Amino acid sequence: MASKAPRHEMPCQDAVARAKNFNEVALGYPQEIAVEEAKRCIQCKKPKCVEGCPVGVEIPQFIKQIAEGNFLEAAQVIKRKNSLPAICGRVCPQETQCEAQCILGVKGEPVAIGRLERFAADYEMAHGTTKFTKPAPTGKKVAIIGAGPAGLTCAAELAREGHAVTVFEALHVAGGVLMYGIPEFRLPKAIVQKEINSLKDMGVEILVNQVVGKVTSVHELLENGYDAVFIGTGAGLPYFMNIPGENLNGVYSANEFLTRSNLMKAYNFPQYATPIKVGEQVAVLGGGNVAMDAARTALRLGAKDVYIVYRRSMKEMPARVEEVHHAQEEGIQFKILTNPIRINGDENGNVKSMTCLKYELGEPDASGRRRPIPIEGSEFDLPVQTVVVAIGQGPNPLVTTTTEGLALKKSGNILVDEKTLATSIPGVYAGGDIVTGAATVILAMGAGKTAAASINEYLKTK
Image (cartoon, rainbow, N blue to C red; front, side):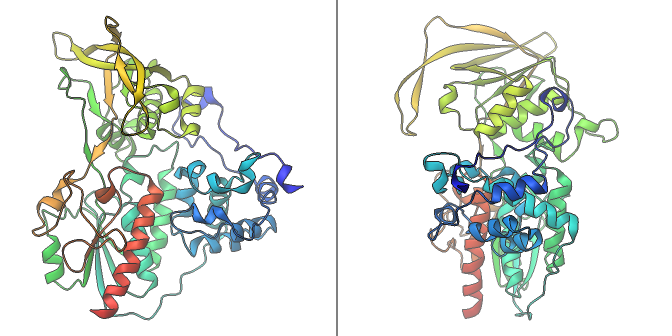
């Protein structure tokens, strides 16, 4: 029976070799393994996996096409709902979404939906993309602020409806967190740009170096010919620990550390002009996916010892299990139930060590996780020369603080109607991390899709 067949593992680079390069770790399914994995799907009459997908990909249909060897057709099925499948196949937390709903996972292992999505998308890129048939233009114009996953998805959905879409991106390259936040070894930048080029083929115009809030404003866009605006500027304001020593040389926010490495290619210095210095010992504070990315990047930049310093246990760690596993394989050291209280510097203002406390877990807090409690007298020094703070990010304030009449939450995130994602300003919608706080790529894409449907309905009545 198909349901009893074992799940096929993804081929990967050897851990020792990959820890010294920035090439992609996961190598993707070859055709024969993709077909065999697809045949594990039992094609449920009421597929719960689709309910677990934030963008509603028709999962059984595309998997059926792979099982039958129709790889291009599989990609076409995915693209009916998802404009960025090669990206999602790599970075989506499928284990907590579509795969968590797979019926095979009740008594065994779920179908590897994400890996099959990646396979189909990569196959289409390699063997010819289906050309987009442009619909008749509606005469309506929409401005998208931010070329991250929410903005790009919203742009693609609106282009399908025949609206003229212009994306305003603050950085010199489109892609948002896909370009600056996720390392090359997890998400190759060439893949991101190929997906973005497919949006350009749909007629989406992307303008870079356009800092909305500086060069123009939301109200000016509405006054200068745009019928609607979508704000998808993300969560780009890093949080810090607020402990002594965070101003020392060698302390980075994860945002800066990863942006220098990913978007500015600091790992290729001096070919690229933005260097990044790491010491022999590096501490990364936090336990999420961003912390794993920063730690694994530091290792590849030449650090000898890289520590993940996290105040709870491995069980409470929010990072994807796969990312934690890859980090452990590569030699990242986990200092769990540990938290810094001070970063210590030398006479030149450089980091030389970090004073930490050991913790134990108490009763659950508001998040449902057991509260970490410091152990009296457990203070110790950890020798490090670089500290990367990866404890989360807040909303990018540039657009929100320069847009008169835009209602905000206490957190600084944009307040929207939960169903339509409409803001307090008529014709202005928002979605992704700027609304929810830092979340996943696919949830941001789902928000972009919801907002696009709402904008489309708004334009019909405008």
